[in-house]
Image (cartoon, rainbow, N blue to C red; front, side, top):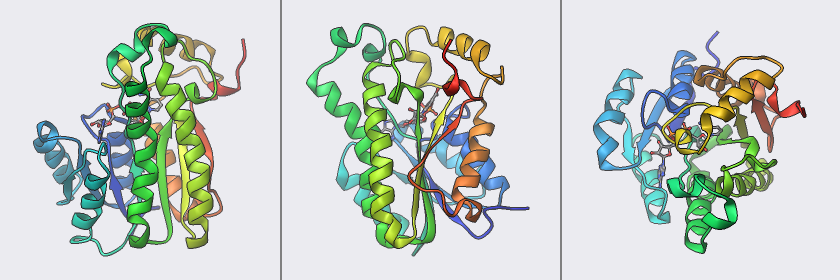
Length: 256
Ligand code: NAD
């Protein structure tokens, strides 16, 4: 059964085949979704265009979310292909690698604090705001979080604080968009080795401990995350909004 047949979904945050967004695109494509893609910068353009082609999509648009005007432009360009659509997946985060190498107080600066919140959290509400009038009833917006939003994970530092903001954002956007019957959720995923996560000091230790201590002692795959994303963007999850759904083999329930 194809859960996303007839749905048009915009995917952000693919940079390579290891990206969580790539796993989500793969699952959504298998479930019959029509996909559109964004790419962060010119360096990634050709690669993302070839991924789009692989997923039978001819829509591949630039968007660096640092500036609001780029997000406005994105939806203006998208409207030339799709008058309306059924949701987007926000898989975007960035912090300078120095932010993940040392003690939080030693690393933090005002500029970095603002930059990380702007890219990892504000961009989600900005995308919701600027696409609001193009979204169909029962559309679903999805973002990606991590347990570091709630608990201290050494060296996750500023990104944990930004993910806490993102998770709160999910609830406020869900409340605001509920009137339009649009749903807004986050997947809080277990650790996955990607170009973003591998810069976190001791990431291999995080992965090792996670596999040892989760109720299901396996690594999380981008396919696991993709399949939950399919459910959350499908009509099977109507009734679920404002939630943080853990796809982490149960790690978040453990203490010692
Ligand atoms: P990734 O590096 O593959 O994806 C991050 C993406 O963010 C990249 O495609 C990059 O191009 C994009 N990006 C960065 N700055 C941007 C900007 N200014 N404008 C537009 N795009 C920008 O890594 P990933 O691990 O797949 O990350 C995807 C999401 O999943 C992130 O929000 C991340 O925090 C979250 N997440 C990751 C893990 C993990 O262990 N990898 C766990 C939980 C949550």
